[in-house]
Image 1 (cartoon, rainbow, N blue to C red):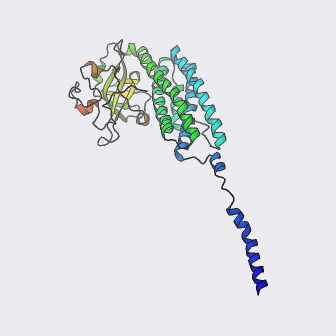
Image 2 (spheres, rainbow, N blue to C red; image 1 turned 90 degrees about the vertical axis):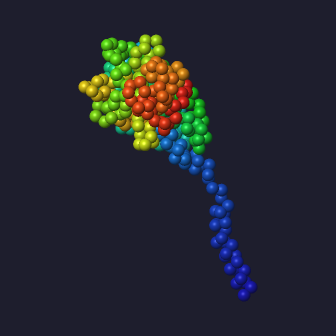
Image 3 (spheres, rainbow, N blue to C red; image 1 turned 120 degrees about the vertical axis):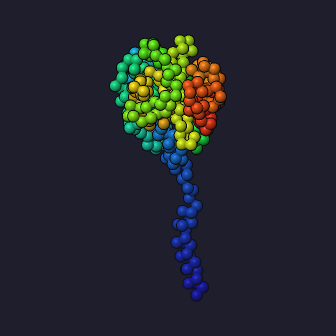
Length: 324
C-alpha cells in the first residue's frame, strides 16, 4: 500500500509539472504592445492623420500646376514637402506597430480633390485656400486631442511634435485666403452692395439650405468682402455654430444666394468660425462690438438678434480669441 501511494504521488507530480512550468512562463505583453494593440482612439488618429497627409500632398501638387497666384503655388509646394515628411514618419511608425493605414483617399476627400481638379486660375486659388483653412483647422483639433489624451506614447509624441507645424500651416492659410479672395473677387464686387446679403438664406448647388448670412468679413485695407459667416441653426440651439465661406463662391440666383462647389455635408464638417480682435467685419463696422454674440446692437438688417449673430448656444461663439 505504501509503495502504491508513492507511485501515485510521483505520477501526479509528473503530469502537473508541465502545467506548473507553463503557469510560471511570463506573458509576452511587450510583444503584444509592439504589434500594435492600440486603443481605438489612437488607431482612429493614425488613420485620419494618414488620410489628411495623402489629401494635402495630392491637393498641393494640383496647386503647383493649376493655381494662378504665385503665393498659392508656393503654399501648395510647402504642403507637399511638409506632409510628405509627416506621411513618411507615420508609415515608419505603422510598420513597427503593425498598423494598417489607408493607401487611397476615401470618398469625401476624393470628391474634394476631383472638384479642385476641375478648376483653374482664380477659381482654383479661392477654393483651394478656403479648403486649406478648413482642413488645417480640423487637423489641428485632431492632433491636439491626440497630444493631450492619446494612449500610445509614440503616437502621442508624434502628435505633440507635429502640432506646431500644422498650426503654422493654419495661420498661413488664413493669412493667404483673404488676399486671394480680394484679388479674385474685386471685379465681381464692383457695383454690388454686399450689405444686402445680410440675413439671406444661402443654398448649396443641390438646393439644400446651408445657413443664413450672419456677418461679412472685410479686408482691413480695401474694405472688400472676403468671407461670409453663416449661421447653422442646429435643433433647439443644439449643434448651432457659425462657419465661414469664401465670398467669391457665392452668386445670386434671383432672390436666392447660392454657394458654388459647396455641399451641406462640407459645411457640416467645417470648423466653427471664431472672431478675434483683428477681425474686420460688416457687423463691427456698423457699430456692433459684440459681433458673434446676441448683443443688442446686432440687429442691423431687420433680423432678430439670434438670426443675425447666432444663438446663445452657438458653441461659445461669443468669446473672441486669436485663431491658432
